[in-house]
Length: 185
Image (cartoon, rainbow, N blue to C red; front, side, top):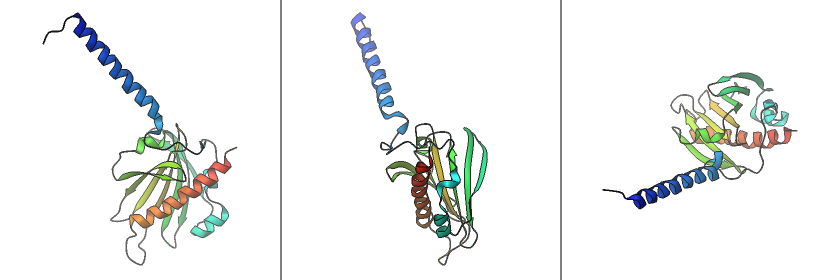
């Protein structure tokens, strides 16, 4: 195939339009990815993550005040608050993630959902032993919170199902969204 001067110019224009279209489509989607517009951004960079549960909510879960921790992830520093119920065998946590929740989209055993108007990625693991459910909440473009629940012992029917564990994680995510959103100055 030979291209004359007009052919190359048309090809160039076509490629330029395609590139501009791809860039604009990427910009319009933003870092939000598959998530809906947030009801409000929640800046979790300085808020006390242990404020995710009130004293009454901790009592309902059978946990003591949370244990605050800091650490390093591959993408930067993280803060967390952890709670344990040694009677029923459930552990809970709320953790900051330096990237937005969109980075968890498409991972193994993940689904995209919405909790209280916020886009979330639900990830499950360890179903045959100690099932865990992590929910990455899209609280802002640059940050996410990861809310986790894990069953560390069997219930009356054996190993708890992901439905049971993720139900607890979803409830904690809803509570964390409400309480942390209210705690931000």
